[in-house]
Image 1 (tube, rainbow, N blue to C red):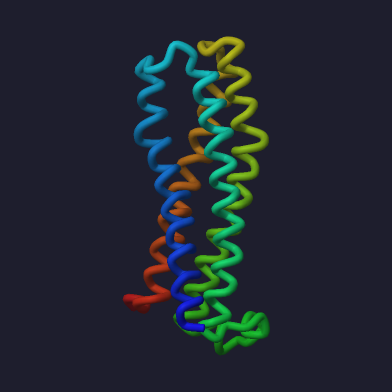
Image 2: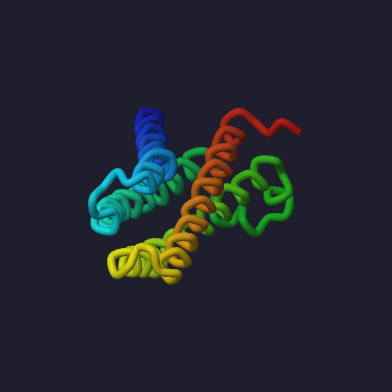
Length: 168
């Protein structure tokens, strides 16, 4: 069982790394490159790379749910614990709730970004990149992307605290 747990943790960390690393690459490299004219057709580039990353990210989300659930189970966490006040008020329980809450927010923000705002932004950019609608939609997509990066960093901090303990 210990070997299976270690493999699950490794896969969990790998999926988180791919997801967070991909977001950071888009935010820190791709978007600034596109803003400086790095592509002759930024709308097509952003749409194509966005769809490809969306598929990767949602695959990572499924892997994270499966491995995260298994990892908690191996560590002795049961569904009934979420109804026990003493567990919920423990440092470990609170940290699990922060991590799960942030992850649920990531799923919500990702769904809005990936299936509503992002496609609207790329459509508006392809019609007229300088229009007020394109600027508004691009700004909305950018804000949602940044929120997800911050939530990803919160999840990462909570993950460290689950393994190493909380600092307070």
